[in-house]
Length: 119
Image (cartoon, rainbow, N blue to C red; front, side, top):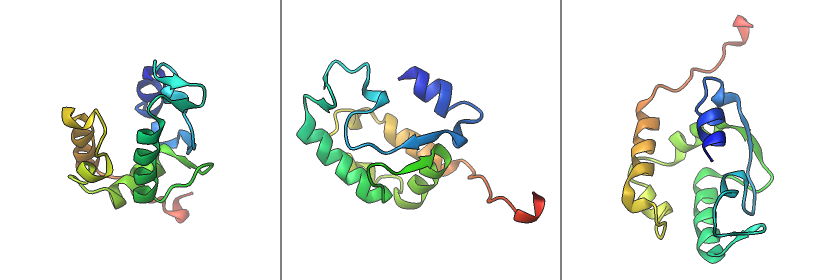
């Protein structure tokens, strides 16, 4: 997971990193001991979490977008405090890391759209 999150998404060029929405376990799930092939031991819980995230961010399996575009969707559709509903039942919610990251994302300046006349 460090290789993906730290080395790629949080790298200086991370916003341009292409990601794909999956309907099953993905690369970030690889080291998890609960992974069972393309599913999870807690698949019903994960499917419910994934459905709430997909609805909030207007994502569909197979969709590809850049990490920067994903962050813009998060800014547009997930206000601070919303994780208590979107991520209810998630074991990590109580630790506050995700809410802290969401607040930081909202506080950070977003990249301005490129001016076509600058190109």
